Amino acid sequence: MPDERALPGRLIKQAWEITWKHKYLWFFGFFAFGGSGNCGGGGNFNTPGNTSGFNAPSDLEIALLIFLGLVFLALVLVAIYLSWRCTGGLIDRVRHIASGKTSNFRETWEAGRPFFGRIFRYWGLMVLFVLAWLLLLGLCAGIGALLYFFVHEIAGIVVGVVLGLIVLLAMIAAMVLLTPITLWGLRYMVLENMPVIEGLKAGWGLTKRKLGPTVLNILVMIGFGLGFGLATLIVVCPFSLGAIGIMAATESTLGMLLFLPALALLFPLIAVFKTYTFSYYTLAFMELRNIEHSEGQILPGPVPPPAPAPIG
Image (cartoon, helix red, strand yellow):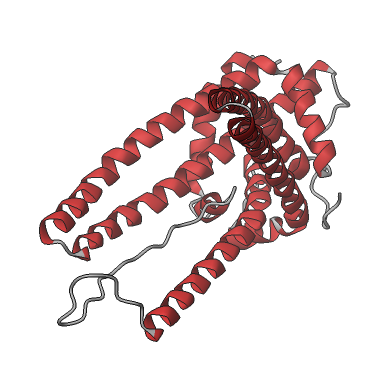
């Protein structure tokens, strides 16, 4: 039986081999879990003889802003669609490659199609979860405001802050608890073809049964995430500082051009890192399930392949 404590060392190397040898996965890694880019711009509109006060935007400027807003909205919608499509495809193909089979971009893209609806419902649940906590925070603020205006100012501030902190701490605790549940649950949905709720329940069960290896694998990836963040700052900061310095010295937006090479470096780095983490967690899930097979905790046999059509 494999030693669960030795899993991270082997999986670190295997996940990197998959990430580096199959570079087409970077596209899917970038968009998985909602990867997207930010767009922005600015400019000065001055007219001769009137350099003070606010100039009302012209019809052309308003039309340009509306156009840019629509383009940005379209890009966001495309990124969301790609996120739902790429997440299932990436997880499925990592399992496929790890089993010794070959794959390519087209097969990975098609592999995500059966799970599109399921990933959509999964993220819908996550959005509802976040909205529920925001609603609780708003309720706390509302209670504090009522006490502030109708009882006593100090009482309203104290109660609002205390309730808000309680809800915030509870939200952080829930997110910590949900992290392994969603990590494994998502892979149950894709690799073992479970509907959303059943997949999350199975993720909770695996977390309880393999709590030690689960925490260890998450800590390993947190360490890699911190290292990635530091490396990203080292790469991007010189360009960002240079751009800010030029804009401050020349009072123009010309320095923003220096952000372009920073973005050109940042996007591939994000794609590689996310592909690696997806690969790592997928491999870790497969190993933990194989260990359970060997321990007789579940019926022996390989993880079943995905169905050709979405279920759940």
